[in-house]
Length: 171
Image (tube, rainbow, N blue to C red; front, side, top):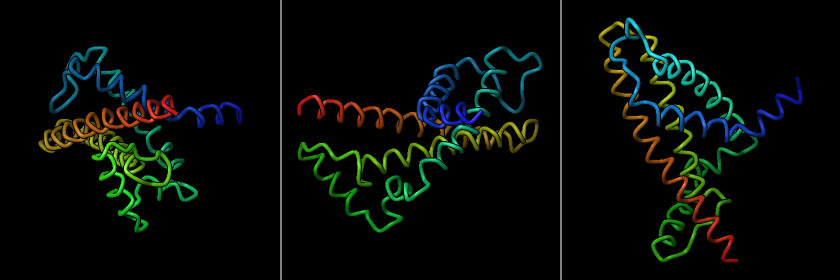
């Protein structure tokens, strides 16, 4: 059992990435508004179960990322290091690729992506919890906003990774 826990823990980023990709890419086939449809389809059921699974992994992955001072890398402004983010941003406009380590721009981007992932999961769970009530439509709107932010941040995160790979290949 300990081996399985270690394997899952080591692969949390991959698991969260695959779950998020599946949920975002299949969302056009989800047919929910105030409540689950009378005859829900496979995508409706799958979105709920995979979404709740993603929320679980999002919470455990967040805890893993933020422990042992990791929160300083993901949220540098909370530790008084916002100047590093600004320095990286200015350097990016001058053609310099920011470092992946050190809690700069790319670390902050990863932290914001993590927060938006959790926001998407929590608003989705709230939407499910309030199904059939007038509040469900409000939570649906919040969920859509969180997912849109997550999608943009995932694309930015992927671009940052690509820039690092390019920088690594150049060296």
